[in-house]
Image (cartoon, rainbow, N blue to C red; front, side):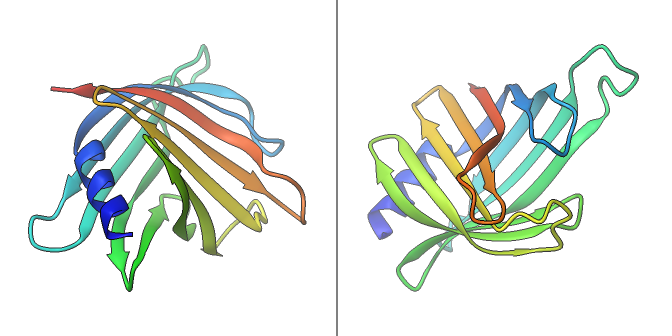
Length: 157
């Protein structure tokens, strides 16, 4: 997993901006604008991230915060983990379970403070030099994954 972590470190590094779409049975569907930063630590096997999204729709919420997530991607005991803390109080730990050139799939190991009663989450990142596409999928009660968030971001110089 060391090689996968180094690839992630190099591909994710920097600032990203773009748009996405949020959907799930428990929310109102909405478009959103997003800013995402990945900052690798130069001394440790850790990548800090900060993701913030803003409503982009024709409601009174336009421009307000939809979602805020911060955390780390770390190499620990031979595993690549993504640790997330969200503005809602939800906390998640994911493990990299599959990757192929440019695509990395993380699945949840642990979720706390979840008002949606999600039993599993999955984050899929597809990265090139200048674009980052991702999905956040969730599943409850033994159901299949259902898309919650999807976005396409561009690297900001």
